[in-house]
Image (tube, rainbow, N blue to C red; front, side, top):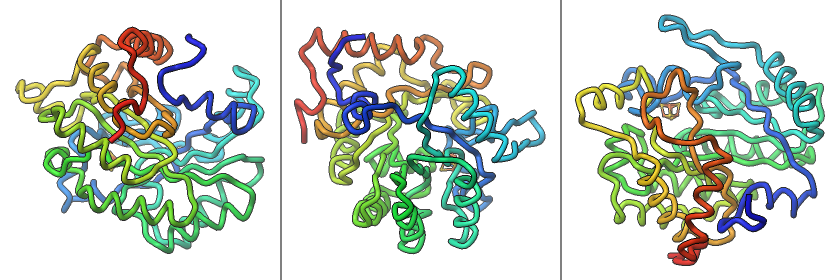
Length: 312
Ligand code: SF4
């Protein structure tokens, strides 16, 4: 891996800020998602029954979703990272579905239960922009008083309302920007999730995504290549040849386009999706994350591209 990547990488950010790596222990606390209820027509078209949960958190056998105990998830995650990577610092990461989709009292119980009994450096909560409000933000802020870094991950996915509608996201760009403002005004860290390569996305739409990201003023961004996953509405379209996911070359072009237009100091936490092979239908030509980083950085270096060199 090159010493200096052409983007602001998460590992170098951690090294500079803390001098050590913080390992994320992703948990599925059994939340659902307001966008998956009957009146929202079943959720985002690319989302399956597992809603970003890892296999060790929640499994689906075609009929029934099986939920793994949160304490077991945490202990398994921490032990594995200690054993495999000699990890010493951890962030509790509420990852699957919408992790603010409950009344504040219930949220406090869930977050407290996850944090109890272990030492944590950070609390990370992933959610939808229409599922957070002042009271939930105030609750999350209260964990900063316990010495934790607190980060809210918000799904923008696209900065184009037409694409959000086609995704069946159930919110628009202004809803995302309002939620982002709530989070940053409270002094919480903000991470923005984007999906690149949804059908209908061209340079105009990618530019809108870059503008929305920059307007939100996040500390972090995650880029995901569109994945077509079994059991989703998008998969049905794919079977009818009405949708496809970008292949590796196409995605590299999109990722470069976005990276060059976002603020140079936003930290890039992720660059591709990692849907397990058993669930992923397309694309099939992507390498693992480490190889992808190498391929993308070599491509950007060869063209003289840098994150933010076309900042808008
Ligand atoms: S908001 Fe997340 S969990 Fe809900 S339907 Fe969309 S992708 Fe799935």
